Image (cartoon, rainbow, N blue to C red; front, side, top):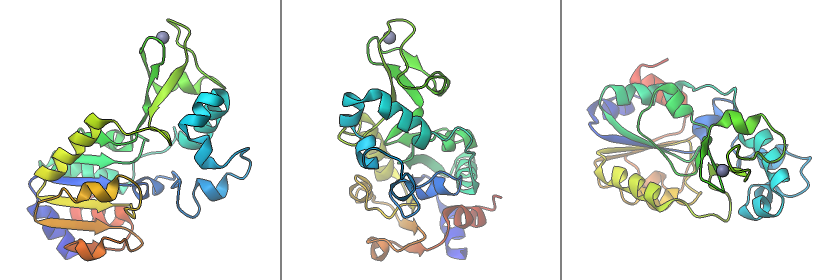
Length: 241
Ligand SMILES: [Zn+2]
């Protein structure tokens, strides 16, 4: 832990790359891990992976939206110690950006200003007809599909579904941040999910830090590996409760 504290204290333009494990400490289940959605959602008419696919969204939008509201949106979740520690580090001028695979907006809730959301956000939604933007509140008011009050077309979440490609601009933004970083902290991800593993190869800085409960295939590439809960590790190292 002393090592992590000293690496973070020496950082000037660190980047944090986070996965589902960052949000599990806020009570949001990891979609893919044991105990996640695959194992808990027994009442589904289809496999969870299909329920979150572009195919399902196109074919049965009402079913998709109801599933989405029930399992992907967590309006009561609050930032945890990891989110708070990263926001504090940014506030001290030592962290350039947070890159996240999560769609919950908890980094922003904790006060992080520069957050690159690879898979989108539940807080952004748009009309498929006229492009008008909507917040989460409008989506959560309804069951089934929600329509645009201006044009009557369907509103969809700005969330990347299975079968959809990530936004090129967002990927480029993330890669640029990683390439310019002096310290890259990877946390709460086993790095098995595309495009996480490929992206960290762009890092050219001095310290690659991996924080994950379980081992990852990249542990041997890292300068520092910590098998701990992410909130605990970052909170302790940065002195944030
Ligand atoms: Zn519209």
